[in-house]
Length: 235
Image (cartoon, rainbow, N blue to C red; front, side):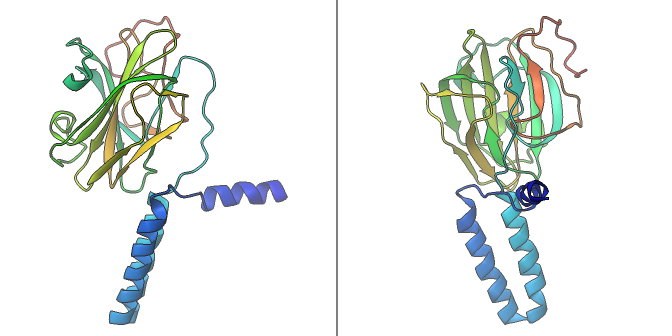
């Protein structure tokens, strides 16, 4: 019975990202003000406060440990799978790579995690627009934080945090030269956004369009697989 209770508490009341308490305090003050203006408005404030708590939640993730597995850096829906050239600031060439785009709604967990272990080769922030992150052109025109990572076996992968329509801040806590493990936390975007992952040549995606993903847990690809890459539509 005790084990079940602990598991339930972790699921219903997950820990918060360090940015959460500040915003939670703002929403609590807002709730008090709404109640002072008109008591029934306290319901609106309470709902917004609960939403704020779950937006900044940072739950425990059970990361696959087998070397070579690429996990999704974001929780959300697989929105696009197809060939695309990585951001030019990462200097990875003009060859199109398989890009997997995961869209995070305002109800998804927004803590981002490293897709595969390795060394950060380059990280570049680029200001831009705040178009709807579900649009393909958001990859080129929106504010973004691009990261290039090299695995222990020399393969390179890119992942990009992209601001969305409501997003006004990208947080990325990693620097070039750092070594990180699969599933390590590396940043957060608020509020509503997208993360793109560019797989190494010849890597076959293991997700499909419309699939729901859990950051740090859902496997996007297997770098050790010798299965030929398909047409970018998933399997």
